[in-house]
Structures are given as structure tokens and as C-alpha cells.
Image (cartoon, rainbow, N blue to C red):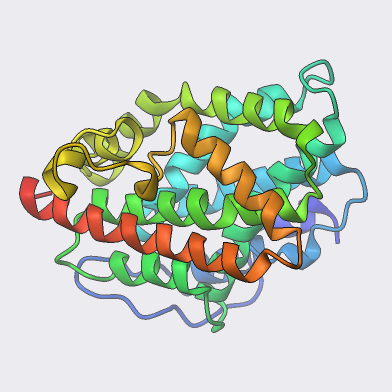
Length: 283
């Protein structure tokens, strides 16, 4: 199937997923669009960069639908779309950016694919993975703020999906330079992400964003002097090392199970901390 065919308006209708009073009901055609656009089985281009470009274009179209209605299931998608446009794709489109461009295309695609697969599950009657099911459940929970919903998406994307993408891409220590170049470039987009999310969803991202990416508020949650590693403050160099190391460990059959358990603990710990900060700040 061609990219143009996938990106074209829907010709078939789908039943919308359930919504609550704090999530906007999309039209059947819009739900069908999202289900089709997020179907990664139709991303069949053999060229790594072309396939990534197709996936990014689809995610952008999905984000436009979410943002049109301020549908809270798009709070993370807006940030992801910002990152792809401002940080990831400019690097990916320049063959001089990486020591191994094919590796860079591969890991970025696999990470994006994981989000699309879970969106597809949400909009096609499937079952999202637990970390994304939590995100969608928060989006439908009117007691959770848009900022809290968005942070659940970043937690799922960075703490759970990114090490899995590291493993799926067949990463080795030799790929560390390319990996860190991508994440460092993404780190520069923080203001763009928060501005867009605040503007679209009235999210008031600041306090939770600073907590997650800069470590503010850790003492309030855990007590002064407690190590921050369990919370994986995602822009910290040590956290990105941990994520990459977790991905390498997932490739080792002897370490896969224990590493997966550690990743789940890190994810749950961060979610608990976000809940506390959201309550403290009334977010």
C-alpha cells in the first residue's frame, strides 16, 4: 500500500472508542482515519528513511485530528510531533549526522512504531500494552489534568518503549554516539513541547515537566538526599545511559527478564511520583 493511499481520507467508518465528559467524541470518519493511519503493517517501504518519513507523516496527521478537538489522548502526540519535526527528522534527513545512518533511522522508526501500534489498538478494538493503556485511561479520567496525562505518555515512551527500541534496533556500544546525538537534540525542544501542549490542551505543563526533566520536586516526594535514579529524570545524562544500558541488557537472554522487571519498576515509580506532584501542586 502506498503512503498516499494510507494518508487519504477514510472510505470506511469505525465505531469510536468510549469517551467521557472530559474527552471529545471524534466522528466515526476521524476514528477510522486514526485506526488506518496508525496501522504500521502498511508501512512496507524497504528503505529505512522512507519508512520513517511515512510513519512521521502519519503521526502528524493523527496529531492534527486530536488537536482539532483537544482530545486528551493527543497530549503526548503533540509533543512527539513537535520532537519529530524540530529535532529528529532534520538529523535523520542529513546523512552526515550519524556514524551509522541506517541504525539511526531504524531506532527512531521502532520507537515511533510502538506508539502508533498502541494508538491502533486503542482505535481498532484491540488492547494497548499496559503502559499505554494507563495513558489512555488517564486521558478518560476527568480527575487527571492534561499535564498529568501527557507525562504518562512521556513515561511510557522513554522509560518503557525507548529501551525496547534500543534492543530491537540491534544496538551495540558502538551505536552509543548516534543514540546520544538523537536524545541530545530532542532535549533542546522542551520549550516548544510545553508551549504547544499548554496552548492546545490548557495543560499547564511547567511544574510536572520541570519535575520530570530537571528533577525539581524530588525532595518533596522522596526526601532530601534520596537518589534520583529510580525516577529516570529523562534529560539527565545518567538516565539516558540507563535507558541505553537497559536496551542492551534486553538483548541478552540471560538478562531480559530481570531487566524488563526493572523497567516496569522504574515506570511505576515515576507514575507514583507524578501523582504526588500533581496533587501537591493541584495540577
